[in-house]
Image 1 (cartoon, rainbow, N blue to C red):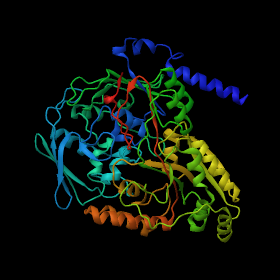
Image 2 (cartoon, rainbow, N blue to C red):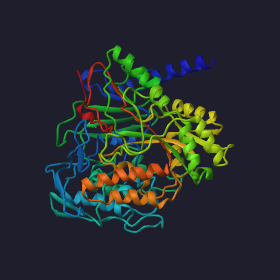
Image 3 (cartoon, rainbow, N blue to C red):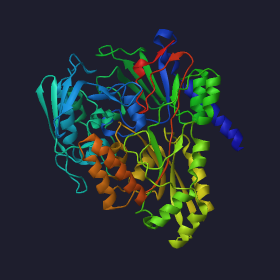
Image 4 (tube, rainbow, N blue to C red):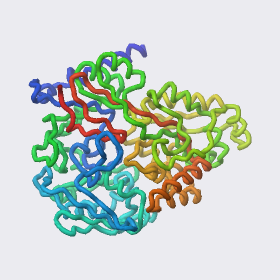
Length: 552
């Protein structure tokens, strides 16, 4: 029965993916090759069409085609390159950033891009109040700039943002109180992409509502028609029933025009469904190819480029959720019980490797002095006994309906770890949760004792990893060790890059001595494209520009 149901489910997913069952789609897509849309299979739905209030990769994959930031990254790499700014510089103290802006740039709604538009965006975020001060909506603003003009929550830090000045039409100056390693990288974030001031006025008429886990995003973020950026595509339609977002080429784009008239992101939430849709021609590409499918797809003639390693996968441990985790011996026991090499060998693509710390070894600041954590089930049992936790029970959460660059098969990876923990006598309570929004919200709120998560870097600086997790107390970790936070914050506050890299190394050593969780692996995720397409350059940051894509 289970095998039969599985085959039916896969067949149904593939049929839906190519539009056999979803009625009304064929006429929208067009049969003429000149109008043929480039369709990409996404693993999950976006949560918003406004990247400012998002932190999810599936959202950014879509919005990145329509919105641009002041700084971008070189195609296929991690080095900074001009975005809406042709060049940028800071004063000696790195507290004043000056941007020379591109000229003759137009927003999708016809508004003119200039320094006033830049300041309107940054001041909008700084002045957010109410529900917008939740880290579910303003996650990246808080990570880069701290709090707001008027914090309504005592837990929020003082804002590091001072203000934005339009010195002239094409020169914007952004000031902060003190240097931070989050800049200039923060200016490249999709969450800091620039919106039309005219669109922002419309945004302000609708507010987010709710609190805690029950936040509702504004209506404008859930349907096309209001958001307006400067990118090569503009968002035309979001058909939630068909799980499709359609973008059309923006003829007024200031750079190289998109090579296809229509771009569609279609959510297909199973690996089998995405693979079958590619093989049948229903989609032209999909991300996070299962390692076991790479060879077969290549043999069939599909293109399966591999990204460079720029991510980290880990097991998080929430100490407030499970007080037993406050004992370092318990955290060590869990870490030694899990066979990370088995996960690398069986679950990751070629090139995957065990992680020794919370920074991949491709980034400056990685320390070679961090002691190795060996897989040692017998010693794990001994540590549990010494801690008085021989009958330890843990709630272990994992996400469903998603794959991530660092986590291609969450359930399979979870089951390996579950078995490893049970082998040393730990009782595991399993909690599968849908990724968006249940899982991500539950993890951030510290509701999972153990959980699987990771990070693909936003920009090439170790603080983008370390600072994301350990610059301040977070519910998802549930500890308050000042030594850890001070080491990470000190590294991020050093304006001199050479000195900062050395501080990162020390911070990595301090973090791993405390052992807040277990770094598991880093891996080079694959992305697949059809035989008949010229794909975009693949990015280690997963920042593909689909304006580069075309049909052969």
